[in-house]
Image 1 (spheres, helix red, strand yellow):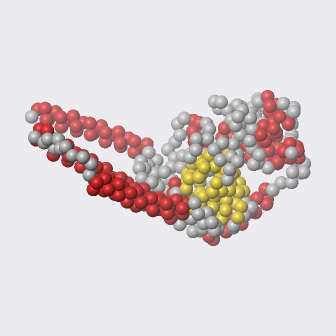
Image 2 (image 1 turned 90 degrees about the vertical axis):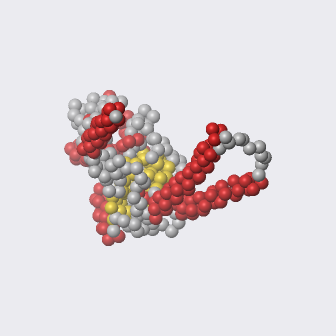
Image 3 (image 1 turned 135 degrees about the vertical axis):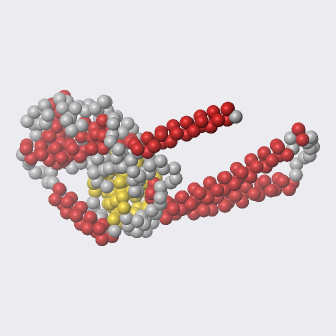
Length: 391
C-alpha cells in the first residue's frame, strides 16, 4: 500500500513538473502565423489551393491504409503467437504451400497498390500541368535571396529582388531574437499575385541549387543553375503566405524566406499600376553623370536594402563576413576592383554577385562605401563605368 502511494506521489510530482515546463515553453512561444508556421504544429499547413487540399487528403488516405495494414498484419501475428503458444499445448503443424494463400497475398497487395496509385497519379499529373496560366513569373534563386520577373500576364515587365528584412537579420545576429511571429520570414518585397488566378512559377538559379517552397500552396520546386523548371498554384483565398528555400544552399540558407501576398483582382491591378510607376520613376540613364553627394545618398539606400544584412549597417562585418569599413579593395584607387567584386562575386560565392542591380545602383553603393565610416576616399564611380565593366 505504501509503495502504491509513493508511486502515485512520484507520478503527481512528475506531472506537475511537466506541466510547469510546458507552461514555461508556452509563455516563450510566439503566436501562430496565418499563412505560415504555427506554434507546436504537427499537421500539414491549412491548404489554400486545390493541389494542397488534394495532397493533404492523400496524406490521410495513405496513413489510413498503412494503419489498417499494420493492425491487420500485427494482429494476425500476435493472435497466432498467443493462440498457438507451446504453454497451451499447441504443436507445430506440418504443411506445404497453399495455392489459395499464394493467390490471396498476391492479389490483395496488388489491389492495395492500385488503390493508392490512382489518386496519387491524378494529383501528381495535376501538379505538373502548368498550361493555360493567367500569370507567369520567373523566380531566380540567388545566394541568398529571390529575384522575381513577371514574364506574362497582368504585370508583365515588373521585376524586383526579395530580400530578408534587415531588422530580422540583425535579430538573428544578436543571438537573442525577441519573440516574433514572422521571425526570419519578413522580406522587403513580397511576391504579389491575384486571387483565383493560375500562376505559373518558372524556377532557376544563378549559383547553386535552391528550392521555391510555399507549404500552404502545396508547392516545392527546385531551382537549378542552367535549368528551367516550372510549377503552378491557384490561391483561393487572399492573405499572406510564407515559405522558405527548401534546398541546403549555403551558410545563409536560413535567411532566404518566401513571402507571397495574394490580393483581390482589384487590389492586384492597383498594385501593378503603382509598381510600374515606381519602376519608371526609379529607371536611370546609365549615361547620366552624378554628383558625389547624390550618389552617396542613393548608395546608402541600396546598401541598407542589400548589403547591411551581412556587412552590418556600420560596415564592420560579422564572423567570416569581411568588413567594408577599412577594406583594402574599397580603399584602392583602382575602382575596377570593387566593380568586379560586385558584378562577379568572390570567395566561391561567399560574396555573391550583384548583377541584378542596375548600373546606377552598383555605382551608388560603391561610392557610398568609399565615402562612409572611416573610408573617406573622395572617390566616385559613375554608372557608365559599371556599364563598361559588364561588357
